[in-house]
Image (cartoon, helix red, strand yellow):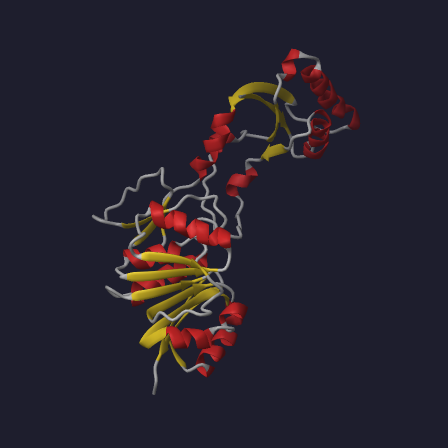
Length: 314
């Protein structure tokens, strides 16, 4: 199906007024492409990796775009839009070039265009995350690669807490270990543990979308023989004994099941806990001490904390 992209080249000053005009002619949304987006610092909720292309933006001013299922040039719509935009000058608004262009776009292009913003990223000494359609150029002979499709419900695996957990897994997972991933999300930590040599990985999440996402990514990475995915509320009813338990969730949740972690860990086993904002560190540390754990490692990235605690019966 063909769509028609209408683009207005204008100024930040006229942005709101031009946007209002376009809204009068279409029930669809609009997009604003501002070159300032390239240079400003971005803060994202889930750590998405994106790359903005300067060639998509004007050298000056902004682009405001909207889309039509029928060609606006085939009737008076285009001229009406042009006249309305030119009329803004009577309100002493600087509309800049004020040019209006229309191009045809294929719907199929929209379905895949977002992929260009996602690139491979190294998240630890040995582990990379990459979209399935990308390749990796690295000097490492056999890099450990997690293939992940961005856009699923749980981000792209590059949030600071995910990186901290993967880096901790590198330090504490040994060959043939059993690992429990509590709150598995998209399955990144489970896959990382398997890549690092774990013999058995059990991935748990209460959210059915997370369970589906983890299963899908497990299949993409050909880890079905190692990773078992189950819908479960934290560690309720779990009887497996683990060498390592990893959980990347909130501090307030972590402190509710540390005793269950203790029961599920083998002697000398490790609990890797993140999703902890730095101001909550002492809350979690105190809770772990009360449960009998010894803190053996902590790390900080962008105000997020990972805590590694060891089960020691003294």
